[in-house]
Image (cartoon, rainbow, N blue to C red; front, side, top):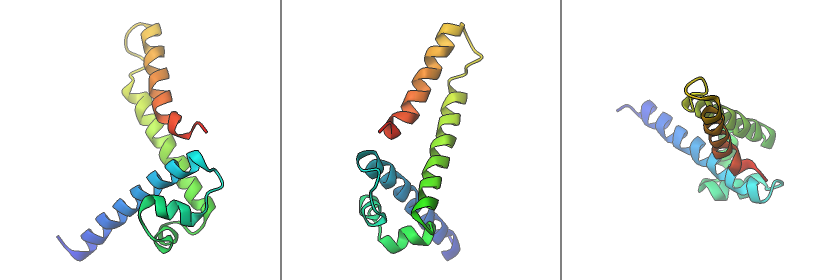
Amino acid sequence: MTTGQRRRADAERSIAAILDGAVAVLAERPDASMAEIAAAAGVSRQTVYAHYESRAALLSAVAARTLERTLQAIDAAAPAAGPPAEALERLIDAWWTTVEPHAR
């Protein structure tokens, strides 16, 4: 493995931790600071800013990730398969699973 690949994997882990931390903290305190989000992610504030130039950019990334995960869950629910009532139940479950962490 080259150093560039290692950094890329490290960056991906940092990004995932930052987004997970942001979701957790913002669910409790929507006005949480970047420092609070960094602490929840287990990274430094500088690491957060290395990946997201502003709080708005971080919030956009959280929203984009949530949308991506929601669309994946909807696809996995196979809404065109089976009886409509069962398909609707699968869709509701998929939606709630992905949206619930952001419900606050």
